[in-house]
Amino acid sequence: MGIRRSPTCFFLSCKSILVHCEKTEKRRKMDGQCFALLIDADNVSAKYIKPILTELSKYGNITYKRIYGDWTSTQHSSWKDELLKNSITPIQQFSYTQGKNATDSAMIIDAMDILYTQEVDGFCIVSSDSDFTRLVSRLRESGKIVIGMGENKTPEPFRKACDKFTILENLLNEQAPGTAQGSGDSIKKEKIEEDIIKMILENQDNNKTTGLGEVGSRLVSLHPDFDVRSYGYNMLSKFLEEFEKIELVKKGNFVAVALREDRRQKADVDKYLLQIVKASGASGIELSTLGNRAYEKFKDFKINDYGYSQFNKYIKSIDHIQVKRAGTILIAKYKE
Picture (cartoon, rainbow, N blue to C red):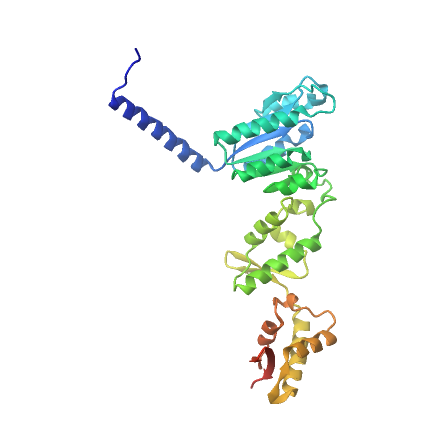
């Protein structure tokens, strides 16, 4: 015959479980986000372990630290001292079949097991192998943050699948000043500048200022492997100073990113357009015609360079010019 518990005992038992859960949840909130670190020893060198742990600690606490490989192989001998010093759990995975990567399978199975425990907020997958691309996508579909780390040779699909991807060579360079900076596969600066200009123009259309923090987060969303360390910098603000078409504007504690005006050329353009509009008299001049005149006179003239996405908005910014609508046509007229 089984032992029957009284309702009071059952209530106290449930209460203690709830208190324990509340304490656990409170501790997790206090400590920040929790991450599972899973390392593919077959595709990552032991020299990166300290930079990896330092980098991941910026995002939260590392609650799982596991590394996968065939530890009977001499190939992984350099890892053994590092595992002990950094309290990383080695997971033995024999290579049963030549050419088949058993390590990948073991990591994937463990990642899914950890996912279903709901004990972590995110994963850090360290590998230079594209075989984990689908795993990363699956973890993100379940609402988990995924940080990827790998060498510069890491294939593009794996990089793009992550919320954030960090090139390991950058971490090593950061810890050893004087080493060669920059990676061959980093995103072209022209592309980055183009993306930032689009952000600024989008915000201007919505009467919003573009902040430095927004630029950083949106660049990572567009390019998960974007990292200023790839270009020899450790601060986004310093990196952005390289660009000719954008500038940083400090407003108290807020740093805005704005389009840099070539004020001398803008003054010339404004003066030229004002003369044309004034000469057109009371009837004014069609905006399309005025635009053509501007582009003919100033070959490199672009309204985007002055913070505008529409020509009529640019014209309205010039003193003594007003824009009127005549049916579907916009007319620029001189005003005193």
